[in-house]
Length: 265
Image (cartoon, rainbow, N blue to C red; front, side, top):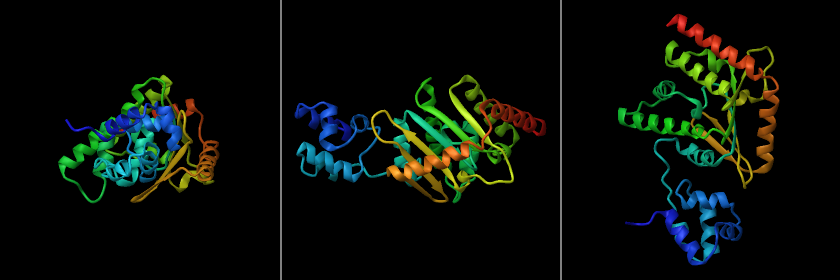
C-alpha cells in the first residue's frame, strides 16, 4: 500500500531520529502543525513544505508532492481555514447572515446550501451536506474547542428552510448554550451600527502557535495570520460583543423566536 504524504514525512523525520518538537524547531513550525501534517489532517503550504525539505535534507520531495487539490466539499477559499478550525482550542465566530457552519443542524445546512448559485447536482449537494455535518463533530469533545458565537439578530429572525427548520435550529443553539458547551450572544437590532456588520469573521487560537483570523464575503474568503491584522479583527469582534446581549437574554430570545416560528408552521 502506498504511503500517504503524512506517513512519508513521519518516516523521513524518524529516519533522522528527531522528535516532532525537534523537526518543528528546525523547520520554524509548531509541533501541532507537524502532528496535523503527519496524520493527514492538514497539508502544508508551499512555504512550509519548502521549510520541511530544507530541514530534513529531502531536496524538493515534500514541496513537489505536496497535495494541492482542495476538498471539493468546501469552497476552495475556505479549505485552509477549515484545516485550522480542526486544530483550534478556542473559536470565536461572528455571523451577520447565517448560523455558523459548526453550529448548523442538517436541515438548516441543507437549506443554506440549496440556496446557493449556481445549482449543483444531488450528488454534489449530498457530499456538501455530509461534510458540513462532519464539521459539527468538533463539538463532540465536551471541552475543546471553546466556542463563542456572536450573531446578528437577523440570523435568528430569518426562517431559513421554513419555520419548522428554523425553530429546530434555534432550539439546537439554545440547547448547546444551556448545556454550557458554547456561548451565544445576539446583537439586537438598534439605531446604531456596530463594527462587525462588515461581514463574517472567525478567530481561532491554538495550543502552541499564533492565532489566525478568517473573514468572508461573496465568493471570497481570506485567512489572516499577520499579528497586526489578527489583532485588528479581534478588536472589531470585541467592540461588537460589547453591543450584544448577555448569554441568558440571548438564549431567551432564541427560545421565544423558536416558539413564534412553530406557531406559524
